[in-house]
Length: 283
Ligand code: NAI
Image 1 (tube, helix red, strand yellow):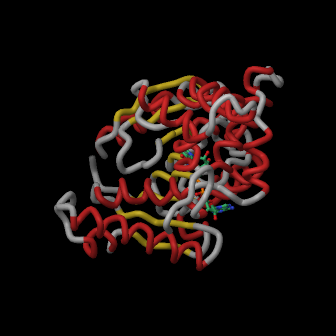
Image 2 (cartoon, rainbow, N blue to C red):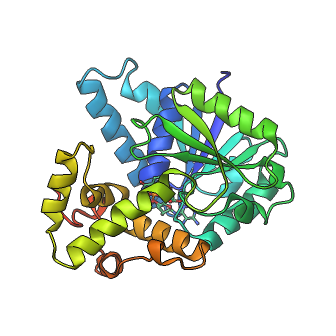
């Protein structure tokens, strides 16, 4: 694939990882987040991760060569030359729509506007742009540099050529793109809802502790337990996805969020990113 300019909007866990994927593959990456501090932190986190990979012998190129291809920008206006924009900001429809309506005015008409949303409707996000044909879901998994799966989600009006282009791009950067339909939570996050929710109900009813549940689930062959996984994803992100799937399915009881999720978010125990969630971490 020709090396192009990729813009990433949101430099948190996912935006950061997505920037790493494209920069490592040789693309020029423009990274935007809301404040200079967050942009700086995103760059530092990315460089740290690359450095650790380099030490482990898992990186051919030098960290500085890769980092030279990553630029932070101070405004969305500076993303006008990007051929693909991947939005990875908070899981809120209002915030995502605001960004897409701005990107629609800023970016060239041929640019593809992709969202990394875990659960929100691609069609609804695309409803604020003039040409919804160019809006597509490009759903990476955490950690983005490691996980190969990318759900490629076509909204109601997404052009099939745009879907094909995203499949090509994802394949070229070493990912495994799979086309899915625009339904709440797509496939992975819909199938995974009961995994988290049933575990939360078991812990809430004190049938087993958080640690015991994770231990048992891993002993049964899963790579991670439901609580460890929530800590990795971010309890706030996982909760937002649960609420969104629940509301989108007209409050079907099987998707009902659990009070423990909300209280963890209210107490700002968000998982690894805050140093503590269901477990504590050395930051
Ligand atoms: P995060 O909380 O780590 O990062 C979100 C970032 O968005 C923050 O740096 C925040 O400052 C930034 N942001 C907020 N409003 C913004 C705006 N208006 N303009 C630019 N930046 C803004 O969240 P995370 O985990 O990276 O999630 C981002 C998206 O990726 C969400 O839609 C989430 O559902 C999705 N996702 C998350 C996964 C996970 O495991 N955490 C996995 C796959 C998708």
